Length: 134
Image (cartoon, rainbow, N blue to C red; front, side, top):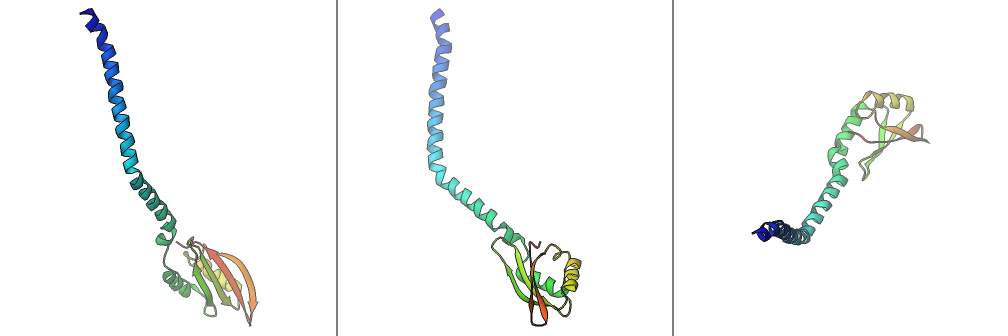
């Protein structure tokens, strides 16, 4: 009887090791079987993160409509593009760059644009802007 009482903890520990080994083997099999699904999920999340700036920013047409309403009468759009990172690049022609700057600051969506350069063209200045519109 004493041997049975003494053997109980040993049998319990041995049984626990056997069960733990089976569970580890099952976990390894599941991990191997689910690896392709996990890889697809990770790739999907990375693609979602990459596209988020483009999806969450307004379309170029909506931004151009806002820009057209905010531009001074004598200013015009030379070039507009949205890069892969969602940043907006504009080139605007105006005879008065100071009036253009003031007009853009009054439109909240366009106030975030930063001037990155100026160049003289025929009877006007072409002012370049870059920024993330929301």
